[in-house]
Length: 317
Image (tube, rainbow, N blue to C red; front, side, top):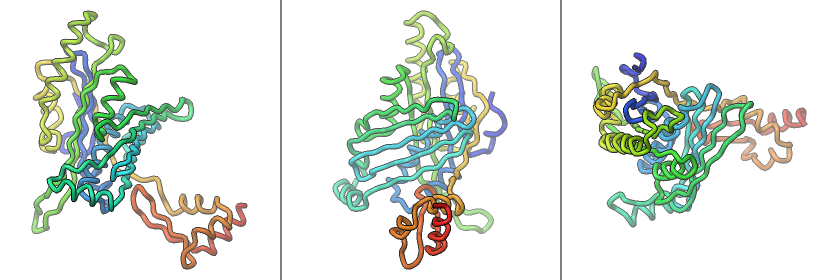
């Protein structure tokens, strides 16, 4: 069974195995981590929902990496949301951002006042796995069919990995009531469930192809009964949810991996990057005697004196 970390915790990925069905999976829950990431930007709620979905999928897939591994998910589309970028650094550090066209977003919403605007257009989903300096970098690319991230990931597993996969993700903005005289506040929650069929090498329980297919179909049908509110409910312990879904299949949960929002940027890192440019290149960045840099991931603003940067760059050059 899983360790005690998940009892009362709110940001984690927990792997599990469905013994009798020959399937494995991961359950993701995020609260403070996803709230931190989405709260760093003033995105419209539909854009935040999309980024939340991308972050959940990234945590779900990245959790399979060994220590020091990195998983990168990126979408590129012709829709109002041009890019979604999410990074997972093992074990459990995530960050992400979205880039969207405000005018195209407003037009799409005006055309669909019921909230059904399509924000991802034709494009592709790229997933990159970097297991460290001693391993070869791998990238898989699939089309964004229907403008849906989850469906694109499912297509990747079916076509590229030949691995039948079920994925469901829920993201919602919720109001939490205040306590001890403090006012309530809005926060984000995200949850996801992934189940994959094991190959015979991975531990499938039967060599009979029909039996294995029937077992996988049963596991997939049971997984599909999960409700959005179950994925998002922090009071519903992961073991209870997995038992509720797969108790007839002998489900076994393993130790959870905590998830944390993070960013690699710092003033020193940004300064090192800027001073790697020539003084002439720095000159093109100057506004009123300053060079201003904003981190796309955490939205932190850095202000540098242009003369100081030129001097440091000249020494380095």
